[in-house]
Image (cartoon, rainbow, N blue to C red; front, side, top):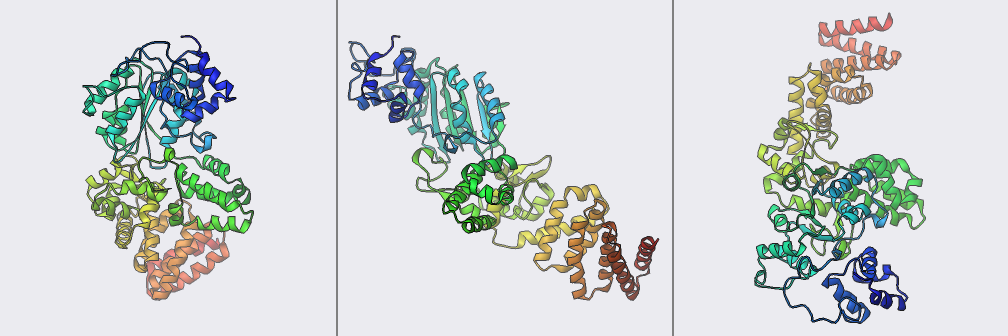
Amino acid sequence: MKPNVRLKYERTIRGWTQARVAQEIDTSVKNIGRWERGSSSPYPYFREKLCKLFGKNALELGFVEDEEPQTSGPVDSQAVVSSLYDPLIPPLPNEGRGLTGRQNLLNVLVEQLCSGRSLAMRGLPGVGKTALAITLIQCPEVLDTFYDGVLWAGLGPRPDISRHLSRWGMLLGLSSTETIKEHSAEGWALALHSAIGKRRMILVLDDVWELEAALALKVGGPHCVLIVTTRFPRIAARFAHESVYTINELSVDDGLALLEQFAPEAMAHDSEALRTLVREVGGLPLALTLLGKHLQTQAYSGKPRRLQAALTQLRDASRRLSLSEPQAPLERSPSLATDAPLSLQSIIAVSDQQLDEQGRLALRALSVFPARPNSFSEEAALAVSQATPETLDTLCDVGLLEYSGPDRYTLHQTIADYASTHLTEHIAGERLIAYTITYIERHATDYEALEQESGNILAGLKYAFGAGQYLKFVRGVILFIPFLMARGLYDLAKLHLQRAYQLTIWSGDTLATATIVLHLGITAYHQGEHNQARVYLHEGLTLAQESGNDALANEIKQWVAQLTA
């Protein structure tokens, strides 16, 4: 093909750059350069836009020579050689600054695509799957490998497949023919597949919720690859098999770096508070972006007190969940309604709404367990939620609950926060208390079993104390303290013992008080507080003798002797 001097002339006489033209018609600068050099020609969709922009016809812009216009019907898939970049591809994320903490993953994904293999990215809502897909298709190596362009479809839970197919058809220059005039999905798929032919293109299916919908858009040719983003593990596995990438949250350091991009003033003001926020949202990129933009607005006034007040307010989970921002049409998540702002609350609620009543109740009940990195057993999950194993499977299938090894599960912090704010009954906490006490009694000397469930046991004791179930709290503490001390967790042991001590004094349970005081003395001894240890042990000896428990009194005497030796 010859250089298109007419197109270049019309641009230059107006004093426009290639970037200006690309912006006006929603394409890339690279495309404009190719069209002017004659290495490719625009599809009819962009040709029409250029004609409208310059006020010229196709002949005047050098797209066709004096020849009869093409008859209606599909464009010959080999006759048009051009780069087609879907105008509905969302803009680069993070305001074009690049993705924080994703470079190694991007390198792997680029290598995967350029080797001609399709891929699927799965992960929690808000983890950045779409952002990765947008960034990936803009990488120079990918653009050079798939030089014929990219088609994009944002699906969501209620996709309009006919609209996506017909829009792709328009971009590819297809007209209604006998094959596709009835707008059947099969007719469109065949026509699109034929139009794409042997072109090297990427087809992106973003936010896939239904397998059937995604399959209807799998229309690429032999030199095309597919990128699928989804919340659902089973959908990702169906499309990419061994090329499924689980997108994880950001590390604390990367999360801090992302927050600092939006709110450097907040980082300078209180970096430790920001570090805490990163942990409290589990490094989820969407949460960090919303937090960063909120802090950015508070820092704008230059008043440190407003920034400090915002940092304090954001410690509240419900406040973090409700942070929101409106979205531009091209940036809108396919999962959200047209007028819905983007927030953690709204993006998680979409998945929550797909559950039946039993599933929603189970999710809320499971929020009484500590969030990741803690995990809990299936036995504990069933006891606390009173759900069936099938319900747990459903929660995993929709991406709200995650597997954490054989017969174990975990909840991400933001999912747990969402579920907890919707938990209106105390029954789940009461079940956790009952399960905790039973578990400790059953495994009192099995420290390996206690180690595995220690986070959940501590949560159960906290619920018991907060709910006023003091007898169960004291019982649990007495049984669990030997494990804590065996692991050297003396500060944690001391905290629970002091709470139990006050409760046993209040209840008048002399024997329980003597036992608690013995453990306080042992804890003080191990922490090098020998004078305090003597006070506790002498008090414990007196109480043990008053209660007539000779075995306990003798044990305390042995510790007194060891202390004075």
